[in-house]
Length: 181
Image (tube, helix red, strand yellow):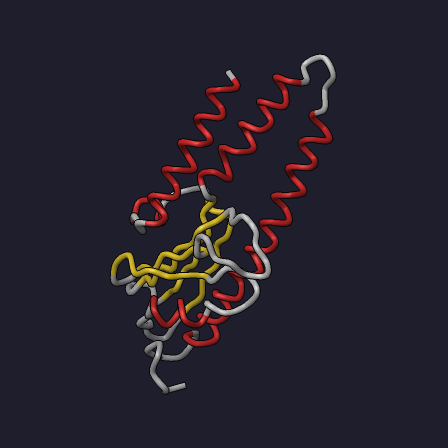
């Protein structure tokens, strides 16, 4: 049973690395939403994935990189294998969607698949080893605390992206990268 959970976690992590690295639309459009915000615009903005990547490439944490999925969608995630002062395991990846018909920009943060599978596997393995001496409350609280901290870090980073987009485009008509502010 333990081997199954370890294999499932490993297979999920490999699949996620491939889908995220190849910017597969299915991966960036689907999942369990952990972050959701939107705002109205006067005219749908033209977003540049390259400009956004440049804007969010500096700092002490891993750069946030952006990739156009289609004309009205940009996927984003932390850059893998970035050597920065502050490193953490991301638990979300994001999608920016411009709805041309409703004049809205929506940003969604979906749970990484490994974020879902790892705690289930970890707690199952912990349960297998500790059936006679339950350690579930401390282990569970430890996992909840770790995920809360990781979520808070990403929530702050996602909010920075959202706030930048909202400040730049809410109630205005702009093309990212141009000088009309």
